[in-house]
Image 1 (spheres, rainbow, N blue to C red):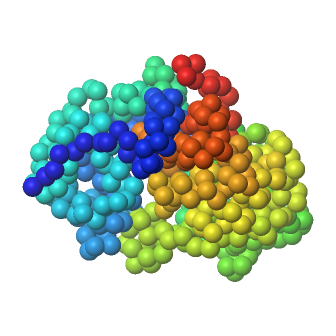
Image 2: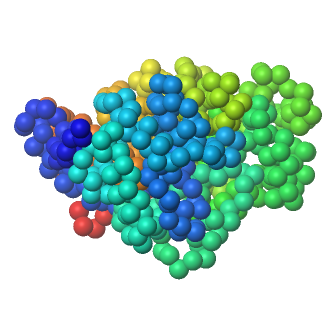
Image 3: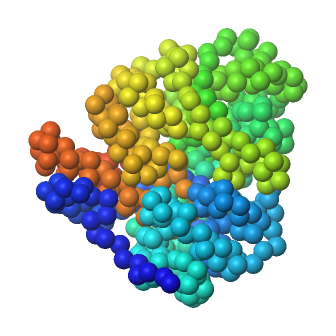
Length: 480
């Protein structure tokens, strides 16, 4: 038997009644602000083609690794959920997949995924009952009926969600045809790209050889020589900037950086393209390339994002059968203080460089990241990321970084999602969590409420705008 679905207006606010009232007032200032989504992994084809999604499974379940990794942990196969294997969609029944998802809803109790899904069902689709075995078919059909209408096409939802800007992420070796189509259309939605060169800077990436070949074809440069390889990066970065990019993104196993001499870098690169590097040399090459990317950012103004510390594709069998990014990435301990020393020794005092740091190792918040960002002009802290993108994770981030780095050495919030309809839900959670944290500071007489009000707007709007150099967006919302 399904239960009524109703979102409490005080969700995620403090239990203490006095502090809760303050949080309400703060949230009222930011609840309806436009969304800046400066880093994510949604598909630009959605906005280029504006084609309707077929059903609830295709839209909400199959692309969301937060959901299917939990189901997989309880024995549900990825094939039965429609998750592609090396880009090839399996033959599956989307309604049966949705029923399986509904039957396992108890797995998501207390998780951020449950918060996001309830928001999507209630706010986006107007559904008034929780998802479960008894309601699965009715909700599947209601979502399908809605998706068949013009109001639920990707561009219409983008406008409805009040998204001021959304950034996708493409590889350095990938074409940007969908972004070109968006720019050529008469739709005013701001969808830009982000430069992600991992496949052509990581010798251990399984696509490195083929990606490097495409990289050369796209740029017309000799990518098998060190000078030509660097020139190809500059050319592709220019292509990405022309497609609206203001940022790069680097998903390295560690935060290691290096500052080799030119001759040593050339010799290392020669071993890389010859396929003769050890694991240590592959790490050294990735480390050198972070420093090379920082040098290029000083030239072209692109913001760097570093997302290290994920032990990617930990499930070797699943990696072989389905490829990358199938929910089997696991956090690991990450060093920043010594790892970043070579890059910071060269560029750390450059105010023109902007490097946003993320972590999956929460132990580094207070010990390493906050002290680093609280000192070096080029460093900014990204928000709680991935496994910590939750109310608890956001609170821990604020508690462990604010005392040393403050608020203004952080980048506000980005949703970093593949699931388009979860974007407003994730920003709602982030804004509520920040307002709850600020309300506590007001209640403890550590902030005046007018300061907290300004901070709430800064965290939701001004800080991501500044961190990602989105100068085309207004400096501050005029209706607040």
